Length: 214
Image 1 (cartoon, rainbow, N blue to C red):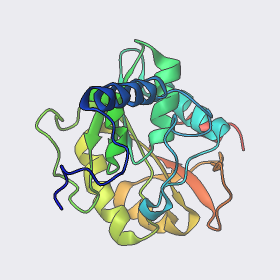
Image 2: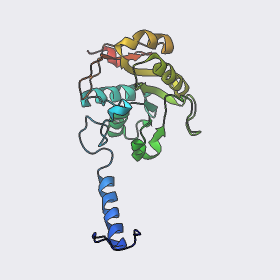
Image 3: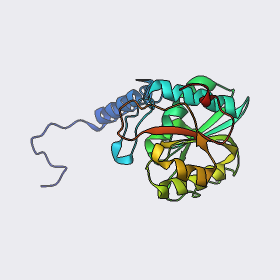
Image 4: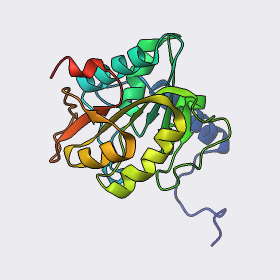
């Protein structure tokens, strides 16, 4: 029996189906980025299979404010595998700074031209519109706690930044981070929306406000 033959199962007309699809598309658009729990990356849920763990709202806000201060008026911020910081930047900065989110997860394409597809395994495989050394600060959170991941992400960071680096990664990566990026440990301790087994820390290579509080 072909698909076009009547098998007794109720079917929607093509007109009704098209209207239903349009309704769902509008609902998805209205529930796009910026809706939902501010402790998440908009309405996009964590995908643990992609090693995604969103910061708490307080941490994301603190890191976003630090990035704005470090970038300066009219500056540019690159968020590499740090979408929850990018979301807070959207909320905070308006026209004061501009930001891009570099992410493997294509769900973040909802952010339009601010989204840059990024695979840490191909650290310099970036679109032509991403000009080298075009960001005043790079905020990066490599997805895996391994030197291989940090080393490749470091290539991306050094390609993007004009100098300033704000790195969030495990405490166990401190020595490798210092060697690869010349960053040092900050007093500020980042927190995640869900508890993680590994201790996370922040590292910078510039005079930072993150040293002024625990």
